[in-house]
Picture (cartoon, rainbow, N blue to C red):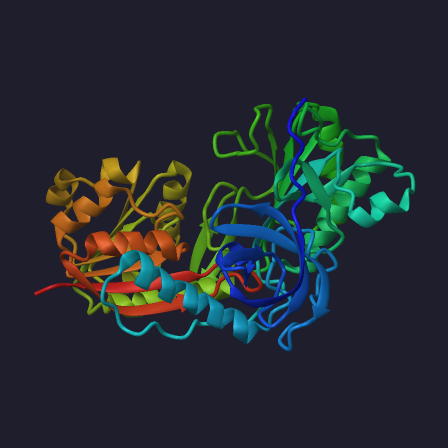
Length: 470
């Protein structure tokens, strides 16, 4: 017989004092740090401990004794269950302060380098319905809330469409309305869900890895163009065609209706064939008269309006005079490269995803830009000393890596190339701080500007500018 699990305590009257990693709140109980989701600094609450380690504990609010003065009513009915938008209950100005502090802490505690004062976070003008891309999962095992379970009411069906529950890969929270994207996205998702239920289509079983309706991606561009990519877990062309015909008829505003038959275990469609049902194979974004083609596999910043402000900051910090050779690393669809091309002599963009590079080349051609080059491949393999010898030593490097930051080999090549200026755009202040420490031997940080791309979440984008030491 296994050892009985020790019952963890309920601690009464805990005062929450701040915010911490992963969007959690933080408190101290008996000299131990306790991480608490959905708390607000100033809350007094009874906290049930869920997990206890030597140096920290994790818990949840069992009863809110005294709400914080800064706590506000969340807009979303799914707040507290859905894993996203964990800061809806915090005023937006306070969110921006917390994001700036994340950057400060990363520079001071991880990078441990000299840096100028971190600027105030550049806030998003639109804090709801701001995302241009959302992804949903269909499941035959939707999550039942504690209230539904306690009610004892019989659940007629378990089919749902929404977001994965944190810590439960096979459970999906059925979403009525998400406030992160234009409501058109909700209407498309709900229509497909209702069509599936009414027509007896199977919703995906995440454990058995079977079922027709699997995932849905919706992109709504700032230009008004709309892309929907429906992913099916079975190759049933008759039902696929009937469903997509119904979607096209119901939503004529969809300008790109695509689908994928994904029979493998994971949900990624990066290695899958994308099939066109109707419309075009892409949509377009626009900045300063430049058009950017975005395909189903393309990376594009998910907050279009704030992306424009982010790229303005990057271009301003690049301090281009017109005669520079610029390298744009992790260029994606070439958005930054094409955005700065009119302000420099030549731009070279490098990106891992071949489809994105194809889009980057088309974007340059469509916009009449003849001073750009784009190369596809793993950054640490493409960006070599031989590559630089062939294409020229850059005056400015703009880098915008994924959350994991830059590979050591890439850092080494940058140090060897010795550009005069580096503009480092990052979605992860922690890995950015690690990389800045590696670059510190030859570069000093002269500007730090956080930019909020994701209101009501703990995520923050940061632009750090480095210049070569004399």
